[in-house]
Length: 336
Ligand SMILES: Cc1cc2nc3c(=O)[nH]c(=O)nc-3n(C[C@H](O)[C@H](O)[C@H](O)COP(=O)(O)OP(=O)(O)OC[C@H]3O[C@@H](n4cnc5c(N)ncnc54)[C@H](O)[C@@H]3O)c2cc1C
Ligand code: SF4
Image (cartoon, rainbow, N blue to C red; front, top):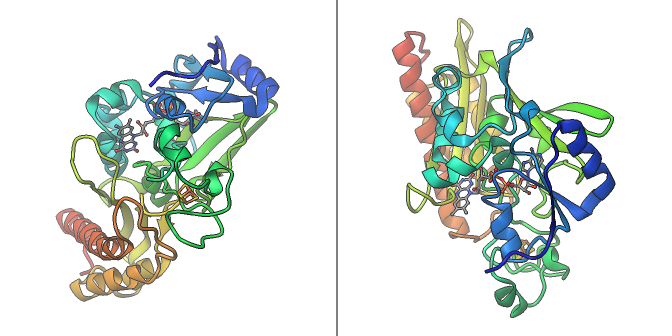
């Protein structure tokens, strides 16, 4: 498949990139590693007139720690480099596990963390060639008014399959977003929207410049588990990011976040509450797994059946909590 025609712009500085995006509006798309965007362009699901390449902007390549206790990772950071960063792996093991789980080595060699954070949602009825799509009635996402994935659905339920998105939400990360004349720091949980067509709050003229991970929330008490058909290259059928703080008061700040199952990461509030009330006991872990299944909301049959996904969610919750329990026991501070 060939790419459609487009104008290629390679700004020399972030300010220049922001100006080009401000002038071009929705005619432009940001190009990072291109491992998702270029495939989508070939399939004609997106046809931007202008591609603004940000991959080599030095302002987006920084990795640094600040006085507020955050580690900032520039959105242009390459995934293979990140996966090999021992300092970040030690502080944020679940985050680096998620980075290492993305696609394949070849794809990670090209891709950037910003592209993964801003990954477009996916649907079996949408991520196909134009010829294939044209053979079906148009759905919400292609300008029609039906959904093939959920009959009768009033909106698009395409899935956010970014491996790092649930981890960012679980770790209370913040996302730095810039557009011409404006710079905002947005909690990851508020960055994602429950909408298959517009799954982030990003405007077309805005760039994610960095992600900020809070230093206190990572080490040793977080977990990431991804389940996919094949280990090497596939998107997740479902993933989970978990973390908990273990202190004298017991288990606090439990976060359980499912990825690759809905249009945004799903935060499991009730399942987390079970653990905060009872600790990481075996019976509480079993109960949390059961409760999680009731918190999933509308689930599609995309890529695998909805019933299987509900089962999977409960199993992953229990696996992640057992992993946290194991790590806690090793640190000698378990309330179990
Ligand atoms: C075969 C295959 C398997 C894959 N498997 C996985 C997988 O297992 N897990 C997974 O998470 N992904 C997977 N992907 C998707 C993709 O490769 C990765 O998510 C990758 O990290 C995307 O990064 P990129 O730099 O290539 O993004 P690009 O393709 O360049 O961009 C992706 C999107 O983000 C936008 N964007 C990029 N950077 C920014 C920024 N700084 N600010 C605002 N918007 C931005 C782009 O405009 C575009 O809409 C797979 C892709 C393929 C082809
Ligand atoms: S979820 Fe429904 S509306 Fe969205 S792309 Fe798929 S078929 Fe179309």
